[in-house]
Amino acid sequence: MTITVKALQKTGPDQPFRVADLERRDVGPRDVLIDIRAAGICHSDIHTIRNEWGEAHFPLAVGHEIAGVVEAVGAEVSGFSAGDRVGVGCLVNSCGECAACADGEEQECTGGKGRKVGTYNSVDVDGSITQGGYAQKVVVDDRFVLRIPDALDFDRAAPLLCAGITTYSPIARWGVGEGTKVAVLGLGGLGHMGVQIAAAKGADVTVLSRTLKKEETALKLGASRVLATTEDDFFRTHRNQFDFILNTISADIPVDKYLGLLRPRGVMAVVGLPPEKQPVGFGALIGGGKVLTGSNIGGIRETQEMLDFCAEHGLGSWIEKVGVDEVDDAYDRVVAGDVLFRFVIDTSTFETAKAESAEAVAG
Ligand SMILES: [Zn+2]
Ligand SMILES: [Zn+2]
Image (cartoon, rainbow, N blue to C red; front, side):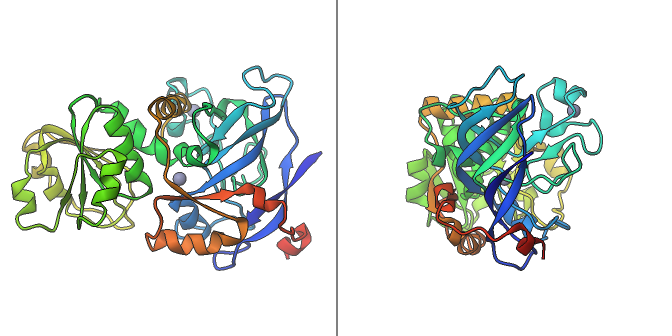
């Protein structure tokens, strides 16, 4: 038995999206069936389905920023019941046994090939390819289902499941708090969450951008100021000023110069992934004992902590809603940087969309 739902799939990297029937597995003993109310569009979705990160498995539905309502649960599920408000992020399974899993850092699972399962384009435990959240419903192991507090609406909560936790985790790990001087590099989907979260932690947040174009927006998000990195002598004027730099930029930057903006023992955490290698001179780390580190989403426990934190502080993603027939255009606008700050698919628009038959998709 499977559950037939409508989903937005592509049959190849250059094909447009189309609504097609998708078979979800039946609800197993540890599964939660979720009626999806909002699905965020992450830049990773675009890289994946356009084959920019290797070969995608087509036909494919992407989406790992999922918010919705529990429709049914398996016999052994005790933590969720029908009607609960829930979310799913980038992971839908892990080994559950390795040291990382035991620590609640499932995103770093070392349990071996096929044990850590991404929400889409991954080989699932049954050998099938996982299909993401651009769909009406999804079936997920209960260990990977998050609770969405009542204070968060689905549209603003969905992007938290990726962009929110990606920025929350390094901010929390490196102890950003009251009075910490934080610089956020890049004000896009990730940066706009980093600014909000760091400011809510009590930090003094500066956005570093090429121009002052986004100043008004940055201040609304909670930043204290915006500095234009193109100003004369910028890197000399502002050296040794920050305790923590959250680098969300996925393009080439002079990393050494930015490390110079950190005070001694300061930390730069990178969460954006540029396509090219970035050269770093060790001298920029040795002088001042600085730390250059990375971070990859976060574990399930910390993702829940992030959702609760955002609810408590009234944070959420700034979003623009699109229907299922507008996603191709939305992709082009994300690539062009033309969105404040995340697109969210209104999954109720599947209702009136006509699904192509599975045969048509396979052909
Ligand atoms: Zn993502
Ligand atoms: Zn593991």
